Length: 196
Image (cartoon, rainbow, N blue to C red; front, top):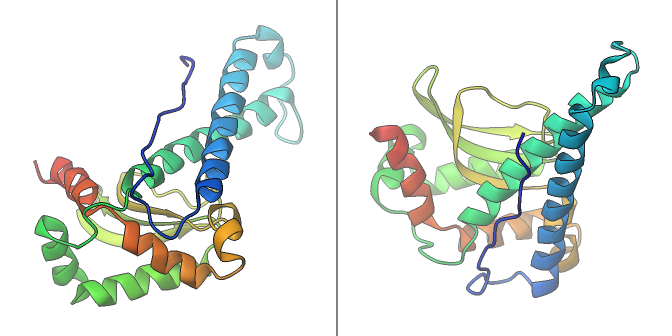
């Protein structure tokens, strides 16, 4: 695996999130990149393959860290990408699909928020390439509950680190702020890739 470098994001138009909240969250993302880069180095060492055990082994620990960190990196990049404070009114193909599948944007947002309040890690709105359906689902951690063949259209981080500095334990208020900063241009661009 090639060495990863952190991507840069422009949070200048994001409302209701303090610079320290955003910078601490971004630093956590960098930490995951550093961890994955170290795991990638470790996996190139043949010695790590000397003991193969599902109870405890260096290779088991490295593989668990690899999926945990790599999924975290991907999810954080999708989250930061759709959190811009721009284009925050639903429109276009996204709006049509939400109405077809959920009845209204408000119903969609209420269900998304409910799942976000019920999970420990992430809530995503996805297009599933396997059965060609749209749905919302939650993950308790970066690598727990991952749906294969699901293309994320909206990604919200609901770990406490995403909101505790600004919102304390009020995850509901945080999710309201998330939706006020959600960039539907980004969502429609992601959706367009699936409609082509």
